[in-house]
Amino acid sequence: MKKISFLLLCIMALSFNNGFSQKCKVGADPITNEKVASFDFSSRTVFYEYKSGVIHLEMKFTYSGSYKVIVPRETEMIFKLENGEIIKLATISDAPPKTRATATQYSAYINTDYSYLVELTKDQVTKLATSKVILIRYPDTQGGSLDYTPKGLGKIYTNVLFKGANCIRENF
Image 1 (cartoon, helix red, strand yellow):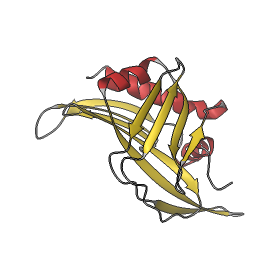
Image 2: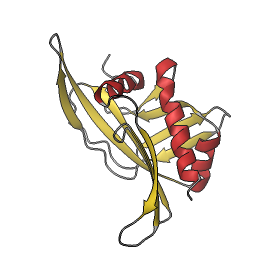
Image 3: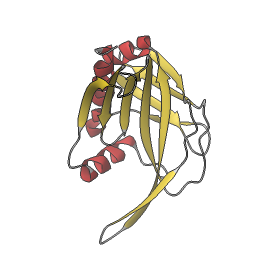
Image 4: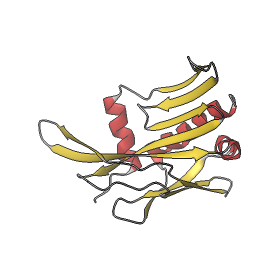
């Protein structure tokens, strides 16, 4: 299979980061003194930031193999929530590939990471903070989209999206 599922990304994040680090930070911008809230999971695998009245969500997806395709801005991502609501988002910047190789004594892997950045409204954050994500439709580097339904260990991402949204919502 050409694509690594979110579950495998989850397992890789565990092995590379000595466990899942989830941090909700609240502080002030050192220049403007404006309130800044952020939530970081596993080195920006899922990252929320609220600054200057703007809310960003960045999600990293890992694809098996080496890719040279830049996923263009305004590419659609969709979240389906437990309560049946659908949140449609569009990326706000191009997503260039970041290819990396990993090796063990017995095998080698080449993976390409793409980080998709979207802007959220307060209403969308509230929806993400009150109902968990049950399906994510994200860009396929070859065109179209892929669906990810969190199951088993992959439900960690559902909890991370939920906790991150709550961190930001508490600090509007």
